[in-house]
Length: 288
Length: 289
Image (cartoon, rainbow over all chains, first blue to last red; front, side, top):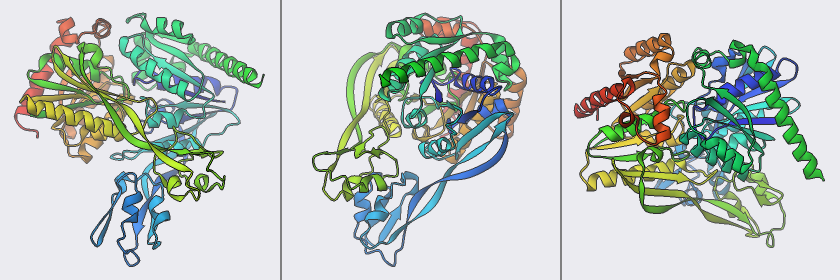
C-alpha cells in the first residue's frame, strides 16, 4: 500500500507526519519512506539514514551532428518547449528548456540528432534501522523536479508499506509524487492560509481519484475554518497534533516526533490502521 | 524601480506574513504573489478584484478513438508514460506532441489548455497581481513570469518605487522564474535543521542566478543555538541578516483576522519587521541592483 503525505501549503508538518508514520510502522513490518520533495528533501535530517547506493538522474537532450544536418528546421518546428532553434546555418539546442521528449531526434529527416544525458539530480537509497529509505535531490539551478521524482518512485517496493513525502503546492511535481497512491494524507494547520491551501490540495487528490483524510497540526491558536470545511465535505480528520513548544523544539533539532516523544507512536499506528480500513473498504465497494 | 522577491526554500517559514507586513510598510509599490500553486497573500490584503485574465499555456494530446487503429506507436514513444490503452492520461501528458506527429492514422490532436487565471486587484496597500494555476497543471514558471511582467508594467505605468513579490517554496521552476533578474532576494528561514538545510540550497540558487540575498530569521528564539549557526554561516558567505523575528502567537492571530501583523500589534514581532524594512530600504537605495 502506498500512502502519500501532502499539503498544498508548505511547512504544515508533512515531514513530521511522514517520518513519524514510517518510523512507527517499521517496528514490526516492512516499510519504505520515499522523500519526493526533491527540491528541499528533509527526511534525512530526521532519519540520519545510512546511504548505501545512489544513481544520477538525467534527461536525454539533443546532440546535433552538424555534418549530417541540412538546417531544414524540422527539429525547431516540432519542439513544443522552444528548446532547439535553427538560425541560418546554426542549430542551437537550449538544454535547460528541454523536457527530453525525443521528438527532435525521432523526427529529424537526416537522422542528425542523437541524445546525450544531462544530469538534473540524484537518487540515493539506504536505510535507517529497519526502515527503507529513498530520496531524490534536484540539482541547484535546475528547474524540473518531475524526472527526479519519477526515479525516486521507481525504487518503491510495493510488497510492503510505502510512505511518500510530497512537495508542497498543487502543480506537476505534486501530481508526479501523489499519482498511483492508494491514499493521501493532507496535513494542514487551523488558519485561513491552511484552509485556503487545503481546499486546493483536496481538489488535486480528487482529480486524481485518490481517497484522502486530514491531519490537523498545531491545534491551539487559529480558527475553526478547517474543521468546518472537513465536516461539510465529509473528509475525516484522522489525527490532531497540538501547538506544543516541545514538539517544535524537537523538530528544530532534527529529532522525529516518535523518537523524542515515543508516546506518539500509538497515535501513528492508529492513524495507519484507519487508513488501511478506508482503503480496504474502498476496494471492497469497487469490487461489488 | 526595485524588485524584492521573498523566498525560503522550506515552506511555512513566514514568507507571506513578511510580505503582508512589507505591503503595509513600504510606500509606492506594487505587490505580486508568485506562489501561483497556493496563493495566500490576498487573504491578508483584502483585495477588490479589478480584472481577471485567462492563462492559456501548453497543450495536451487527445486520441480520437474512431480513427485510432491501436498500433501502439504512441505508447511506445511517449517518454512520460502518459498513454495507456490508447487513451491519454491528461495529468501525465507534458504536451510534447510527438504522439500526434507520428500517429499513422492522424488520430491524435493537440488541444490548448487553459492552465489557470491571473488577476489584478486593488488593495488598501496598492495594486496586487496574483494568479491561480489550474489544479494539477504544468507551467507554473510561465504563469509566474506573467505575474511579474504585469507587476513591472504597473510599476512603470504608475512610476512606483518597489515591486514586492511573495515567492513559492522550493528551488525549482517557479522559484527560478520568480527570482531571475530580481534586485534582491529576501530569504525567510527558521532555526530548524530543515530550515537551515533548505536555506543553504536556496542561497545556492540565488548565487547561480546572480541575485543578491539577505536573510530574515523568523521564530529565531525557537532554537537560539541554531540561530547563531545561521548567523555565522551567513556572515562567512557575506550574506547580511536583516531581521530576527521572535516566535509569537500574535502572528497566527493576525492571519485569522486577515491583517498584516504590523497593523495588528505593536509588540516585538511588529517592531522587528519594521526595523527590517528600514534596513532593506537602505540596501535597495544603495543599489544592490
